[in-house]
Image 1 (tube, rainbow, N blue to C red):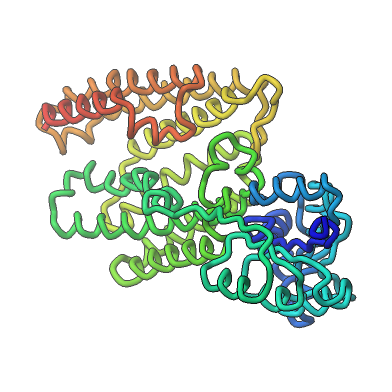
Image 2: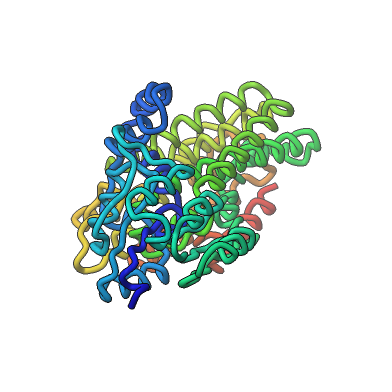
Length: 475
């Protein structure tokens, strides 16, 4: 009973919340208003409290914005039911802390940073000792910075502490409870975070050399492989930063909420370092080994994908065109890496194909909405768009088949193939494959990324084998 009467001060970052709330709020503020970066730079000259205030002012915080430590939160709710005073204590801005307190409804008081009364991680113990008195409160924390608080607390609750912090805390005071819920980051999970399976898309860099029948040239092949590695590193970096900016919507998503970053399994700091490292690797490889034109394509890809992530992805139909453009940009990157020009037929075919695939992705998202849901999370589409999207997607697929057929009978192929007439069979084989894909999309059984469908679907392997046989017969 004496323990229940002792106020329990609860740390936020890494304790109540699995990630860094200030970092998340900063990402939310920048996504909502990119120009806030300049306000943050200006505020940095005034001190940490000014930076925190800018972030708190511009961040868009809603219920479900943060990932909580579920076991610890459940225990806190029990303490609240037993009438124990719970005080939310954080060095983050008070706007953020108030949003958390309002959402959970279990805290009787909030101690957080304001411009008038800044709170720092290392100076938190002074505020708590002054507010409650030495050995008159309990404290729940997780980091080395919390040791100074535990030195003047009556008891401690340890949440995801490392062995060193755990040992120090046990030597200082009574431990009420321990919650160790850190998940192990496996190599497989890390590969999923950098979207290694999405590197299949970057195989489009090989398109121009293959179409020109020059992929067997060792120099061309090596240049293409190096370009593939560079582009894949950049793409992985962008996927990571997309995950960082899309945290609220990902956490509300049926499957994306299990991603390492959304689930809080990997810290935002380490995710940011991983993203920067991948970007630097891609740029350095391109700078050393590839033509300047390839660097220009990379820069354009980064600009377009960043704009897409921050704004364009929410604009219906425009987002599909942009996605298709990014696929085509991969083909252009292959040309830039090797100096081999890309055929106009290839451009037209790729444009219609990837528009169809982009639409299929949106149709799948809409088909997976629950009966009570009308709008796709993070998108501008509603269920009413489904029929129009299906019509546009199938029309785009038809145009892709038509372009493929015209290419097969064009004068261009006579210079590359001995039996070009056999190429006409590519159109029906491709048509059957894309009809199969659309059948799954309309039924809602297509993976949200059509690339995953192509990788795992046996029908895709049969179609690829058929196309390869047709090309061999045409040579």
